[in-house]
Length: 179
Image (spheres, helix red, strand yellow):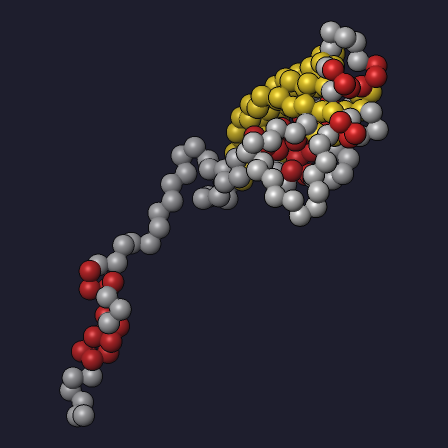
């Protein structure tokens, strides 16, 4: 994806009401096409998202919501394009950079124990970029068309599995020769 999301929708944290702000994001066809190209997929037939930004203590923001989309992906078995549904819940926290714990370069950290918030950039959150990120997370990395079947090579028989099977074939063809 590019540095700037085609869905860019920045929200200034200082302007958030105390009860939060809910946004509905439903991009037009041109924006969906640009986003599909960024994600490396053939297309996005539909994309609807609802994102709620709720301010917390110390300048933190809790972002929740849902992304629902119909995307066109290419089947890894048949190489045919097909439509697939994506539905992802959004649950993310943001905090001012000065409120984030300092992690020294080279320090060992256990990421399974940390649930660090993302840093706010210039005092704002790009709700559109959040939607694009969660859409990307919901894509199947190995998409398979519903009725696609892969038929691999036939299993070798017991004789063929021996590392000496090829030698036995050579020996069998050369029995009439004098040693």
